[in-house]
Image 1 (tube, rainbow, N blue to C red):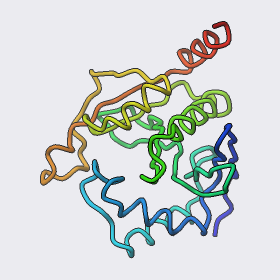
Image 2 (image 1 turned 180 degrees about the vertical axis):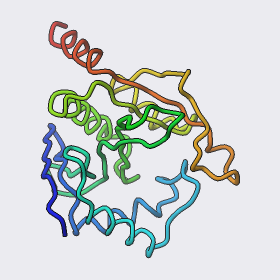
Image 3 (image 1 turned 45 degrees about the vertical axis):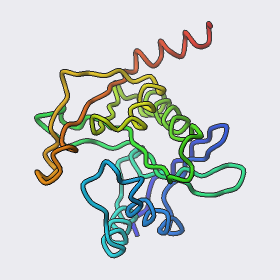
Image 4 (image 1 turned 30 degrees about the vertical axis):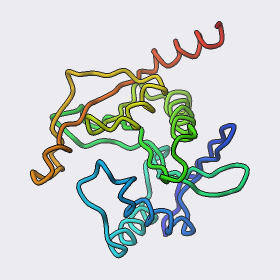
Length: 197
């Protein structure tokens, strides 16, 4: 397996660490759970989930863009995945736009873990990777994800809403995606206001 950049990000309740072989079962859970996949067009078989997991594990990602696992600091339990990735959705979005994303086990919903991980990833994106902007996209009525976007500080950009080309016509209710943005300038302004407040 290729060597990978090692990212460890700590928050008050979480450790965000690189994906490891021990995370296979969690990946399978999140690839098949109907609740987690409510806004996805299909669930994956065990074989497909394993194949995708192996592909991810054997990638040599661009530094800062590997799949991370959310781990509870107190118990060591892995509860979800998150990370930054480059979108390839031209002409709907700019070439190599960077998306922030997460997927959390349903049994841990409602505790603010996705928001905590998202804030930490935004900080990493702007302070370490020196990105100018991050995006997040979601099915238009996925209220849980949209709430996390807002809590992170992202702002809706209705002009960029689009019908996702990878969603099949058999699932028209999932095609419309909305876009939220957060710039480095706005992030730093928010941090300053928080400190001063």
